[in-house]
Length: 348
View (cartoon, rainbow, N blue to C red):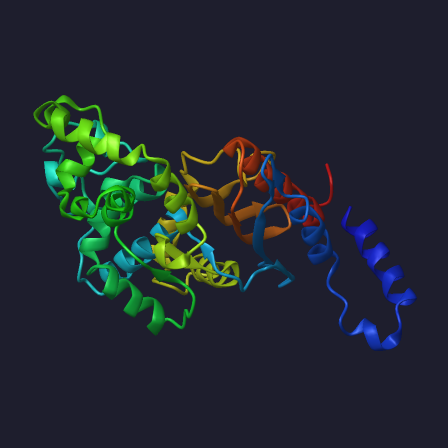
């Protein structure tokens, strides 16, 4: 397939005026533009952004790669890397343990929310769950452990990232909807918010009246309309990044330059254990994928390293504004990933 595409690209170059040939895009970039241009759901087209780099040949391809996208849970890789850098500097012992409390509970994805209080995981366990099950309890614990949102943004800026930026903790992000319904809900505690997103009796039973009142508030159409508007406004996103910057971030992990070699190898092993997003990048692939997924309303993302036969491929793939079934959006990511691997490896 790659030979065919290369030949087609060469014919296009011969047919183009000499002045235009210098501006020709790579064959893979053209393919990606075509595929991302087909992204659509019942509500119409939606935006995709992708950055790809073959680590052996150095070939790159990109579409909307410098645009801003909502990271969703892909931003969790930042806390993972920061924690491993802290371990390298002997500022954090990942073998030490933390006792999970009621105030640590968060809604959304993950497994710790289903465990009894008092769990005593290592910080390595917490990082692992943050990545492979996208655990939100683990995420807010790691945000605090590395120094908080402001510290993360300081670190990202110092590393040269101008787009990659975290806006809030998971707790603050989830509380937005309830604050829109009633500004007084800005005072909700972590345990009160979790009771609104949980069926655990110890959280729900003492707060039944509060839950009924707030659920009535958030059911108003104006709340749904405002939250839809906020999905298009990056200041309300959990975090933001460009595909190109996330690609550079992943390259640092793959090349063992963003932390010590031992730390990077361990991070790659964690990412290879990913439990979510099987319909995204890995869907139609038969080669290993070390990745981190991200989903929130209208967003389906996946980023990582594909260990193709021809060599590792870094891929940062983001979408924004899809409507319809999340599975369809996930499948689009999977189809494009298969096309990229076939481009470099050849079709089976």
